[in-house]
Image 1: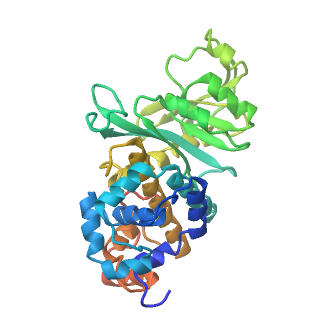
Image 2 (image 1 turned 45 degrees about the vertical axis):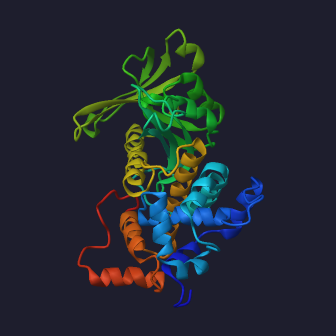
Length: 389
């Protein structure tokens, strides 16, 4: 872009504008709206994420301070907090969910060649859920336990780049395992999960879909050993067994053999027991697969610390989901920018640099070059690294 374009306008150029309007038309998002379109709503909320705004008034005042630059960024009218609040309450959150998925589809190929310390040529997903605490008096639709409120983010990420491919937002009482019903396993792929997802009827669907799972077993598992495979205990392996379930319900819900692998992690001084339906993968690779489940935990920590999803700008389910999905879209946008510009910086560093330079009229690539020239700190930060390339 030219020298007159702000950094904000330049990074918006990485967004598929036509895809966004397809999403808007799908849900009649702009029907009956004369001012402050869905695109302007998205821009205002994305600005809030990029610059760490804490309230609707904060957004209004901050944007007003840069009024002369807003038109070229896509704003056609001043942003008022009442207008933004109404938009968040009434415009379908699915617009922004679909747009985030559109960005995910563009980001995943960019990270497909990310090297992992795994001897495995397959797509690997990690599943987990995290809870965001809320005040029950303000969010009565989101009950949690012990008289508190909360929403839960059920998430599955592609560990090649820590890109979220599935997110479902529910109130906090919804069990993690129910989210398995919302995703069809892809043939040949692996899904790594913690023991909160143990449900043998649901896990049996992986076999029917020709997909694989690696899951940590519970301590009360009822089974009978059929065969023990040879292992090398110096690697940390303790057993590699073919088993059948013997519980009165589990044996009916999962009627075929399973593979049970026990592994000792000396760095944690902990024994892990894994179950999988893959009988060909080396046992040590199965243990390594479970170690990569940490990617989803790191993803949760990153978005909670660096995006605005712990303090919400509205109290309705629609407003909360809109804010979360736009935050996810911003996260994926930063990941796309990192690859498209060939940046070596961490996502945290990229976000912080953008937050302080959004309305500078400097080529965005030059912004990062100037950062490297003006600081002696290495470009690769060790704070919550999601992309170490």
